Each structure stands twice: as structure tokens, then as C-alpha cells.
Length: 364
Image: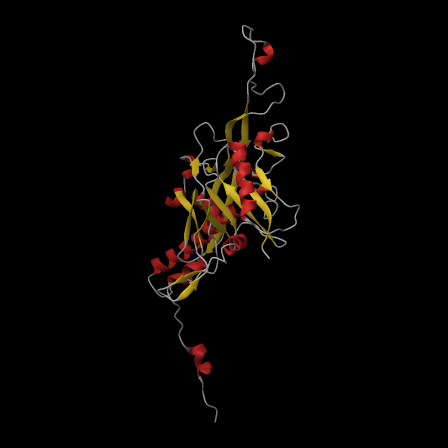
């Protein structure tokens, strides 16, 4: 005679899941959350624009000063001025979309718990997924966006000009201003020709020195990739501490600094071919600029339209992206409803020579 075991009757037993969904994604926006944000001002909505004064001598411009002989008139050659130029970046357009079918609403309605709780919970989870993914993509592009999308549904669409995608380059053109014409517009880059080399205190000091020589200020924030953060922490490994209370060796800490500058790690900072990066920022000269929603664009938009985007690790950790997001119900099609989550922003660096980065840092 066969003996029944639990697996034989498992399909006939009722099933109740725990109330909380355990999300497996990690969408923290560490770098974006560390940067200030501002809304575009009235009259400056069509793009991101600001004026810069360039101290280089080019095309007949460039302020000069000279020793002079007593009782001499000012010549026309002495009448000079620095160049004032417009820096212009296009808006980066981001959106995420999702749909909910009638069948999903109906099955949620008859699930355990009240119908309204189930339906709202289903929709809330979809909104959370779309919003956090949107924030996460914007954080990725804050690092590597080139101003033009190279993947996704709309290749060629305008995206963020990221830190390593051109915003902190030592050459080329940024915001329509050429470094070739105006060398003071260049950022500070320490690379090693693609060959990884160890991170050292002296290498960090070299970049800080170049930044100081260019702008007479020091950085106030350092952001790096996860394994570069690990390598920096390892520089202190010989300095072991013995804790008399717990009787344990403590060889690491969660908060890192260098010369009083906080160092944070971001999972979205790129690492490739055994190398990572470390970026020196000055938050006085780097901003997330967003296009505020107008009254017309708020029509038929949910009350969350002005809520800030947030990143999350899927659990208890949240980073404030500080960019408004709108959740927009679209036209119903067949037996499902479609929703769009969107934001419009750009990364603006107003003084590039106050920032820089170290590339080709070995993480092996």
C-alpha cells in the first residue's frame, strides 16, 4: 500500500504568501543624490543655457595686463577683454511605461484582503518599479551618457551628457564650447593609456593639485566605483586597530575620507578590463537641472506629478534623486490601461576645471 506524503497533497492545499514583496533589484542613485538640483528658470526652458567667461586669448579676445611707461597713453592694443560665451546643452528626455490589464485588476480584486487594497497595491508596485528604474537609468547616464542614446528603443534620442561621457573631458567640445579654442574650459583627467595601475595617495594628490592650479579651489566630494572604493580602503590595511571591548581586530570602516573630502562609492560608476575610476567633484559647479511641469502638462496627470524621483535597493535604502516625475495615464486600449512615467533633465557643469577624474585604476 502506498503511503501519502506531503508532496502528494501539496497541490490541493491553499497557499498564502507573506504580505511584503521582496524586491530583488538594486536601483540606488548614489551620485545623483549627492548632487544639487534646480528647476529651469522662466525664459530658459527651451534648453539648458548659461554664460561663461573664458580667460584664454582667442580670436582677438583675452584680457591682458602689462607694465607701462609713465605718461603714456593707452593704446588700442591694450584695450582687451575676456570672452563671454554661451554654454548650451539640450534637454535629456526620459520615460518608463507599463500597463495593467483588466484581468490583473480582477484577480487582485478577489485575492486575500480588501479589493481596494489589492488593486491599489498592484498599481503602486508598478509605479514604484517604473519610477525607480527611471531614476536608476538617469544615474547610469550621469556617469556614461554621451548626450545621445546608443541603446534602447530610441537610439539617437537626447540623453544626459555624463561625467565620463564628455562632461569632464580634457579635450573636445562641451556645451558648444571648444577646448581647442579655450583651454581653460578643459577638465582635469589623469589616465594611463588604458593600462591599469594601482591607486596611491600621490596619484590622488596629483589630481587635486591640477584642479587647484586650474581654479584655486579644492574638490568637496569624491565618487568612485565600488572596487576602487575597496582599493582605497585597502590602503589603510596595515593600520589595524584592536578593540579592547570586543576583543576583535577591526580593519575596515564604512565612512572614508581623503584630506577631509568624503569618498562615496556608486555601483553605476563604470568598471571594465580590470580598471575603475575615481571622480573629484565640486558641488558648487555641478547641478542636475530639470524642466518643471507646467499647468498644461499637468492636465490628466496624477497627483504624484511633482513628486521627486527616488532610487532604492528594493528594501529599506532610499536615495532622493531630486528630479520631479509625472505619472501619466494614457489612452485605454482594449482590456488594459497604459501609464507613462517621465522626467526631463540635464547635468550641468558650469566650471569644468574645478572637477576631474582618475582613470585606469587597477581593481584586480
